[in-house]
Image 1 (tube, rainbow, N blue to C red):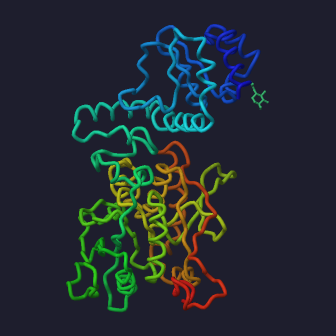
Image 2 (image 1 turned 45 degrees about the horizontal axis):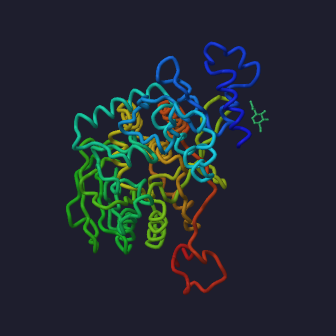
Length: 452
Ligand SMILES: *[C@@H]1O[C@H](CO)[C@@H](O)[C@H](O)[C@H]1NC(C)=O
């Protein structure tokens, strides 16, 4: 990098101190973009004024800005800690710059570069983000009681995704557990979304409630009654050892299944469709996996996206392959903050779309969580028969041929909103230790995952 560094110095000082005026000369010698990307440090001397657009160019290219513009207030310095992403030099001590930069260790270089990428992506990568960041900073000033602290602004996923109306305490968000040395709660709330009437004591939802309630991590069960039929009386519901609360949906819309109900008091939510088939073992295992990945969606049925080049659009597939990029919310754990973010961050137009077609709310949740974390969800092992059971139990909405076509359109509407495709493919599947090993079933912790 020493070589690259000296090249950049020559570039900025000898040839192109003012690329605006001498750009022709520069482009002949080097490709400017490539040179930025090749460089570890980029000098940012004052331009015609104190600031210089070279600062943002360097930031974007993961080239650590070395700022030589005494008295320049860096952008959003009220909330951004620039010392984590840039080297702030003194323009009067220009000749010390080479030795200052040489003394920066490899680890710090990596950390600085990573921070340039985070800050660029979170606050500067589009005019919309710059405007939004400005407005949110003003909001923080106006209502200082619910303003974001520096930790929220300066660590992933950044202030725009950590809504202070939800909490101003970093420990309430799933992203900062590792940073704060906190572990997520030991219990979960199962939220069962019901759209069909409760038929009998042997209906699948009753079995589901009983299986979930037996989990040692289950704090309570919340049933969201989004069905047009009247609420069944109390004695029709199975009796469980954990509290069972039935909330009658006010709007009975698809998007309301992710409403941040006050009844959800645990960090973890186990989101369930009424026809999901899960055993207590599966619930326990998935929850222990979620505790290790509290910022992601962890669950059972997985789906994938792909680029359909013949139609120049994103496609959605339920084919069983080794890869997946979504985990359906019919049987998945995630942090309750995502209910808040889903309800308050996603534009009303998309929520209305989801409600109108009564479809895609699960895809939208996956888009949201992957946009925030930049990571794929996590698939956990499932019973062999899960696939078949899911197929026979398909409720009317899955049998509808339009259903699949709608899901394709949703993929494109959602990525258009974000301006990029946030979903990330993964091939990882987590199985319990000794899963399908030649070991007596009695010695295994999650026995019924393989026995059924
Ligand atoms: C950037 O680095 C690559 C690989 O080391 C090299 O081939 C290329 O010439 C460099 N470009 C510039 C403009 O220095």
